[in-house]
Length: 579
View (tube, rainbow, N blue to C red):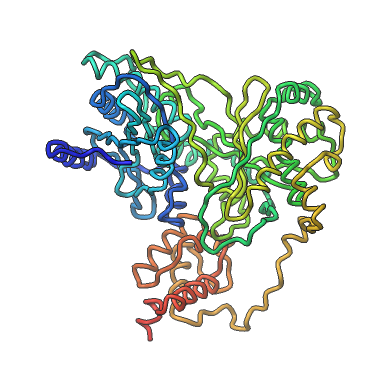
C-alpha cells in the first residue's frame, strides 16, 4: 500500500487549507453528549474507541477533484464538522472554525477490497485530538483506476450513526454539481448542531425536563453493575478489541412472539431486548439488570438533516426475579420501553447524575452492555452517472462495553452480531452468547409461557457442564468487605491529602471533608472531578482522571497516585516540593 505523491502545489494548497480551517469563528457550550465524549477521551487518551466509520465503494470513472470539492461543501454546510472541543474554565466549549478547502488524500491499495478493509481498520486506530482537530478525516482508497473506496472517519463527539448517512447522502448529491459547476439541490440547513446544544441546555436549566429526570432517578435507584463472568482476568491496561459472532432470528419466530405477547404493542426490538435480558441474566446470575438502548435523539424534524452527536442512550432496567414466563417478561419490557421513549429527552449524562450509580475507574456507569436494533432502510444515496455505489461493511475493531448486540430489523427478521470485549472473553464465548440469543427466541416462540429458567441458554449451560460455579446472587455479588478505617478522624496525613481536602472543600462547596469521604456522595460529578484534576495539576500534583471519574476517597486517590509514581521511580511533584 502506497500513498500517492504530493506535488509542491498540492503542498502549498494543504498549508492554505490548514490556515483557513484554523481561523476560529466563535465558541459555544458543548452539548451534554460532547462533554461525556470529552471526559471519556481524557480518561482513555491515546485510543480510538470513539471513532465513527463509514465506507463507500465507487466503481466507475471518478473525478477526484469534484469529490474533494463536494466534501469541502459538506463541511462548510455543517459547522460541527469544523468544530473542536476544549476545556474552557469549568466547562467544555465547542469552538467552530471558518470553512475552507478540505483535502481528500488518495492512497493506492493494490490488494483489492479485502486490503482496503484492512487499511480502513488501520487508519481507524489513529486517535483524534479533540482540541486541535479536525474531527473528520476522509481518504480515497484507490483499488484500480475506476475502482475506489471512500473512507470517512469522524469522532463520535461530532457525529452519530444517522449523521454518517447524512454525510454520505450529501456527498453523493453534491458530486455532480461540483463536477459540472452547477447549482446543488440541497436546501439550506434550518439549524446547526450548536443551536440544538444551546436549546437542550436551556430546557434543562428551565426545569422543563424535571418530570423526566425524576422518573429516571426513581427507576434507576439502587441499580447495580452488571458483572458478566469473564473468561480472562481483567487487565490493568485494556486493548479494547472485540470478538464477535453472528445472530439470526427468522421472521416467523419474531412475528409469533410479537403476536402472542400479553396486551400487544410489541416491536421486534422489544422482543430482542427481552431475549437479550434473559441471556444476560442466565449468564451472570443477576435478576436485576440494565441494558443500554440507543435512540436517535432527534425529537424535531428540523434536526433530521443535521450532522452531530444526537444519539441518546436509554438505560432500560429489567426485573427477571421470580422466574416469570417469557411472555410476562416481554410485557414488562414493552411497558418499560414505552415509559422510556416518552422520557427520552433527558441526556444520559443527567440520568447518571440523578441515579447516583456505583462508579468504578475504567467502567461506564449505569450500562455495561448495549443493545442496538436498527431498521433496515435504504441509505438514499444520490446517483452518480457511470458510477456504481455500494456501502462497504467494516467489522468492529474496538469495543468500549463488555458486551454489545448490534442487530438489524428487516420486516420481522432480526440479524446482526454479538460482540464481546476481547480483553475479557474468548471467541468461543461470543459464539455461545449469539447461539443463546437465537435459542431463547426459538424456544420462547414455540412456548411463550415457558419459565425463563427452562429456556435453553448455551452460554449458561456450558458453564454448568464445565462445573464452573454460577455467579453469586446479586446481593452476595455486591457485598463489600468491611473496611477497617484508621483512627485518624479522617484528617489528612500527607501533603497530597492536605491539598485535595482544600480542593474538595472549594469545588464541592462543603465546609468539612475527611480523607475517607466518597467524592460522589459529597455531591461530586464528572465536571467537578475535572476541575479538581486541573487545579491539582496546577499545584504540582498529577492525578489520574480515570481514577477520579470512578468512586473514590481522597486517601484512595492519593494512595493510587503515590503507588503509580513509586512504580515509575519518582515521587509526586507535590510531595517532593513539600519534602
